Image (cartoon, rainbow over all chains, first blue to last red):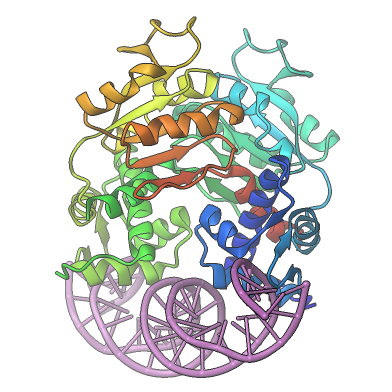
Length: 207
Length: 207
DNA sequence: TAGATTGTTAATCGATTAACAATC
DNA sequence: TAGATTGTTAATCGATTAACAATC
């Protein structure tokens, strides 16, 4: 098995496969073919077989891949077998929706802290967590070993919230708002852009 | 100017540029360089210049690109100058968050209908829209010329909601739930997968 | 055995990158 | 003029695709 660092493309595809396998497993299926994986991931089936074969012969000819086995193998390759802690900024509708869903929990991420600037929301409970004021972020991030920050705040509040995360030494920022954020050295910013993806899908429908 | 169909990669990148330009324009800046566009899009600056130069010489050497002019040009290339109508399924926290935000509105998409199965929510107002029961979807989609359906329902309800959209003849489905959806001929399904993208970012942090 | 699907090859295409002249 | 950034080339690398033998 190759022990080199994966290329950007390989890591992106393996993450996508892993996410699909986790949902497939949850749905009770225990076998999957490169064809089905292709339909859900948008990646060419030959490319999928090539990716998986390069890291170990995980499949059975004529049968496909064992979902849980493959899931475990990819988790090891991506070094994401453990639990990782997330801080969520913003407890409006979007923040509450994220906190209550299993989007992250299904994949080994635990939302470990909620922050707000609105004093009315501070102190309220969401699930097992108590909403904290943003001023407590540095200490909490350190204490709870949080490396990911999720921004679910209005666009206007996003830059300040991002700076708070950077000051608190978070390594990865996940931006759900439509605001553009400045980059900081050593911090990865990932912005959701549903509108951009919709424009892309529309182009192929319109032409 | 080339009038051929864009490649998948080109269309994806141009959509991303357009989304960033729209936000840049909103922020009041009227000039942008390939370097800044690169920081926000993750695309190599040379690749950006190559993409843009291939479709017309839009930039000024030593200066950069005029934001609004470039935005207009890309909109024409992507055939997305017009308004497009969206149906939103699910009026929980996530649905309300999407309906009240400008994520789609900023890019020429108008949320034109809201649907729910919960009788308590049907009839309530969200902004200017009245929440409708899912049973009205076929007629409404036809009447309001809706081609995009956004799923903001719990994972368990997602497959049924997706089928309702397909029956209503929607062409593009945007899945915000973590459920896997079956594909249908002629319908593009695009699933958000924040957890997958987070696994990807984490891999490069951990290795 | 028959059917299905992986693993693998080879050929093509698109993306990435460095470098730099052109020019604002 | 000096500084900055585009447009463009060329070389390399990774992704896509078709095809098919291997094998479950």
